[in-house]
Image (tube, rainbow, N blue to C red; front, side, top):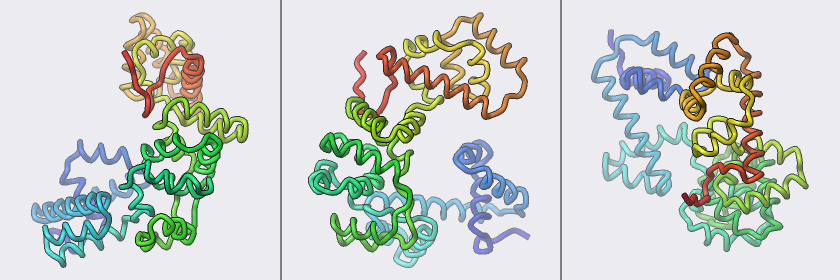
Length: 336
């Protein structure tokens, strides 16, 4: 007996959606999921009963409506999304869509701040305590945060960056208090659960988007004040997969510094794009040698691959510091 849409759980609807989209598109979606999520959805797909074309269409429409609602929320908030949806599908349907979405979507604090010019935000925040500034920047886009951080006084720049990196979880009461200073009417959007913000990944995103001079100053200050944190940030500033963003001259330059035996391990777990970037800048004979080494090496531990790739990244970072190569980042203006 065919399944009905109202009988399906959220996980089952996701399975129906993946079936409807087909194997290629589903494979792309799986790339963004955890191993546990992939296993659960694969099991759901395998156990899925007969799904009628009508159910597939209903699930697809529901997914589309939720995506549109999420886009409206990011553009102008929950109120704006509800108004637009009411005009499009009617009041009851709009409320139903919003309710489904907010069950899984947490509206981020400081929603209003992401729509304000960074220079205006800077005027409000530059006199605030570094911890307050760090909290707000953790919720903004990396480009906004980069603009604000680059214009803070030098003594605050590294301190704010350090506090973002050290930040883990902030209580809703603190978020509400800070948020109300900037815009009281948005304080009711804050979730009652503890909200994750900041962390090393957040400060890396900001530093990747900031101008190189400010980035260098902040990293030098952090190296003096917190060497361990500075090293952890450095490890994430340029990852092995970013090799594909380097220009040909830079790739050829750092290749000369890498031992062939290291390449045979580092490239084991590399993407096809990275392999193409590396092999495309080597001699045919060298490529054949490395490929033979990779083949005869057999299985290699993931830990060994990661260590080899980090050694390559360390060489790239060293050459960049010496001015031998340039790794493109946000805020850089490239002149050919």
